[in-house]
Amino acid sequence: MSVVQNVVGATGSTADTSPFRGNMVSQALRRVDDNVLIREAQRGNRAAFEELVRQYDHAVLRLALRLTASEQDAQDIYQEAFLKAYRNLVSFRFECSFYTWIYRIVTNLCLDHLRKKNVRKEDAPVTTMQDGTELSLLDQVADDRAHSNPERDLMRRELGHKIGIALNRLTARERMVFELKHYQGLKLRTIGEMLNTTEETAKNTLFRATQKLRGALAEMRE
Image (cartoon, rainbow, N blue to C red; front, top):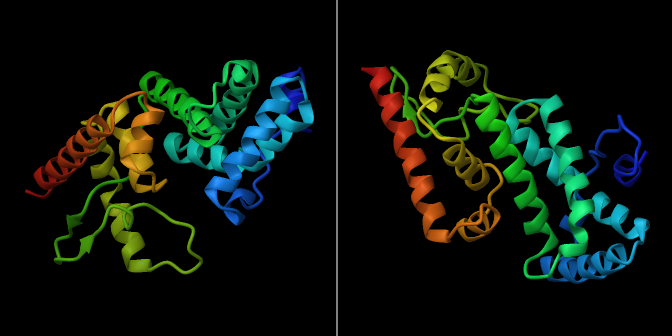
C-alpha cells in the first residue's frame, strides 16, 4: 500500500527499504525531475507524489531511524513527514530542493520527538580507552558491516552507559546537528537550511556538541 494511500485514509504500511534510486543520477538532474513531479502533484496528480515518495522514502526512514534510535518511532515520523509534505505541497515555492524540504520536515519532527522523549543515543567523539586504543566518533556506534571486530564491539558495549550519560549534556538541537553532520554526511550549510538557521550557527552548534561530549567522556575516565 502506498504512502499516498496512507495519507488519504489507509494505515499500517511501512517504507520500501530498497536502495535509494536517486543515487543513480546527479543531484542536478534529480532536482529537475523532482520539480516536474512536484508541479504535477500540486495539480492533484497522486501518481506524481507517489513517485516522489518512492525516490525519498528510504532516505527519510533511514534518517528518522538514525535520529530516534527506535524503529517504531522512525516509522511514525516517516508517515507523519510524508503526510505533512502531502498536505503542504501546494505551498512549496521551489526555493530549495525537495530533498532539503523533506529533510527539514523530518528533522523538525525528530527535534520535537527528542525534546518530548528525551531520547538518549549511543554515539560520542573520539575517546581513548585504558589500553591507549582510540575509538572515533563512528567507531563507537554499531554499524552494518558484515564482519565487525569482536574486541572493538566489546569496547563499544563497555562505553555504552558512559556515552549515554555524556549525551545528557547535549540539547536536542545539538544532537540533531551532530547526527546530520557525522552520520548523514550533510554540509553545514544544508543543515542550517534544514533547521532554519545559518551555516555559522550550525557550525557553532556542532562545535559545542563535540566539546561537550569530549569533556563528559574525559571526566568519566578520570
